[in-house]
Image 1 (spheres, rainbow, N blue to C red):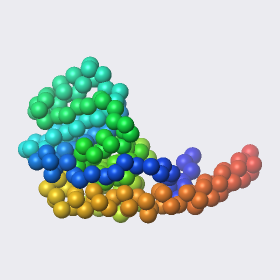
Image 2: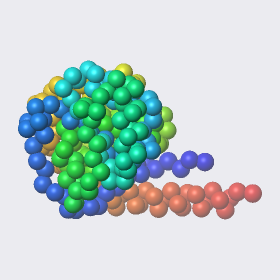
Image 3: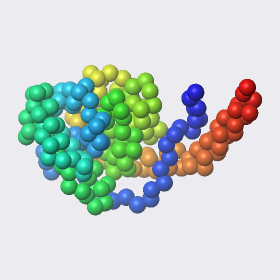
Image 4: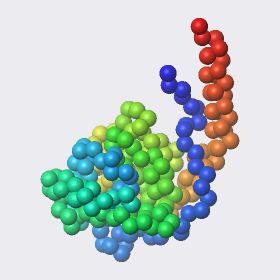
Length: 223
C-alpha cells in the first residue's frame, strides 16, 4: 500500500550552478518555450497542447533539447508536429551537449512539462536556472512532480494547470508577461534555495526514518 511522506519525496543537494543570464526573448524578439525531458514522455495529448500554444503565440518557438536525440527521432518529432499544423521553422531541436548541461536552460524563457509523465527533476533544474515550468498536474505521483516543485516554491497558482486548456492559457499568459518572466529569472533560484527542497534535508530524512519504523511495526504485527 502507499506510504505517504509528510515532507514530500524530493530533496536536492547540488551546489554548483552556472550563472543565470537574461531571458532569451530580449535578444531573440520572441518567446522560446523549452522541453528538456526524455522524448518517451511526449504523448500525443501533450504534443497537441504544445502545438496549440504555438498557434496562439504566432512568433513563439519550441525548443526541444535532449542529447540522446537521433536523426530518426528528430524526423519523427517534426512529422508529428507537421500533422498538428506546426512547420519546422517553429521548432528548434538540439542534441548537442552543453557543458555543464545546465547552460541549456538559458535557451528558454518558459519550460513546458510533459504529460501524463511529469519531469520533476527537469522542473527543479529549470527553476534553479531561472526558468519557470508550466505543468498539467494529474491525479497520480507520476504526473504531479513538476507541480509539487511549483507548489513548494510558491508558484502553484501561476504555473500549475488542471486541464489542457488551462495549461495553454497559463503558458501564453506568462509568455505575454515579460515583466513577470524577468522577475522569475532573477528570483527562482533563490526561491528554490530557500525552500524545503534545499533546506529540509534533515527533516526529510527524519520523516523517512519514522516511516520505515512504521512499516516495520506494521509488519511484525501482521499475521
